[in-house]
Image (cartoon, rainbow, N blue to C red; front, side, top):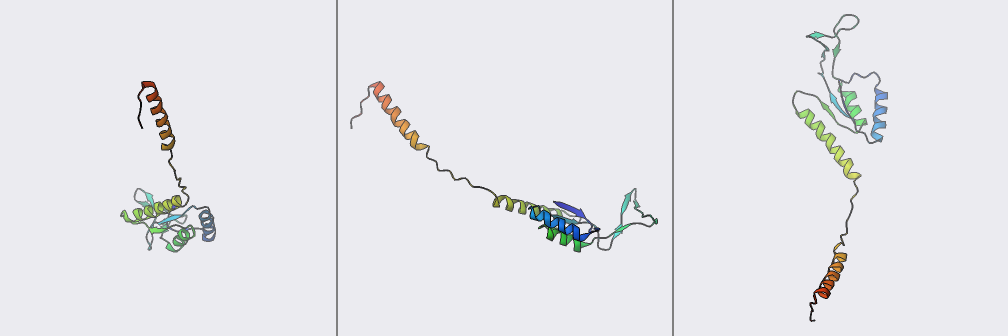
Length: 141
């Protein structure tokens, strides 16, 4: 599971409990931190900022501490989002690595003992004997 957020949660304790439950079911929670540490107005479209009931702009700041705790409780990774591909690639690599690890842990290996050639050898000897009997070819020993 990948969560993209700025870390402004109403109840951090309940969120961590849920993350631990999911981790116990082998569901990893990876977190992308969005925003800046200083905070910025939340855009509302058309170049305007979202305003609260009091008419002032609503600000959103990145709160990394609960995001790191969430990723840790969910057996996942935390990455701060940026404008390059590095953050996305690192998180995708982490997700794929944990998925491959789980797949390898639960993968059964089937060992084949191929003895098909034994009945084939017997069948070939019988067919050869029948061929010799039919054509009258005699094999001297």
